[in-house]
Image (cartoon, rainbow, N blue to C red; front, side):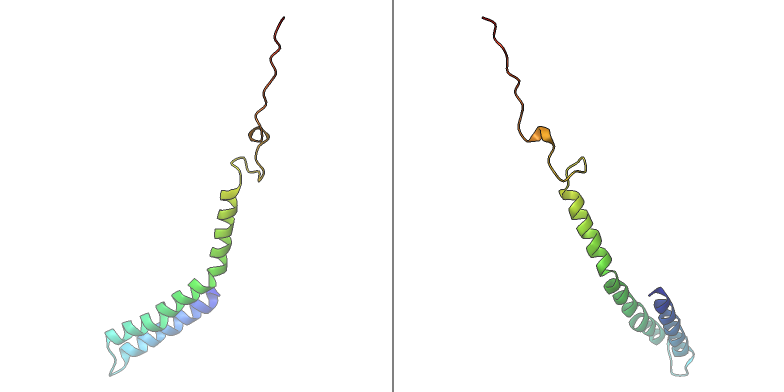
Length: 91
């Protein structure tokens, strides 16, 4: 994916240079070419390609938040029921 983005960036930079060097071209036209053909579409592609990674990270964070502090998924035995030791009374 990064190779495609790098190649697309190269093409867009060459388009912007051609826009600047053209007899009817301007720097504003080159800047708009760079932004509208380069930065915008590449940012969209990177965002859409990163969606599965963000989804995995969110699920992993939710799973770790729901686990007990000691890392186990079940509650500790002491929290189930308090144990009361019987006290023997002397007659």
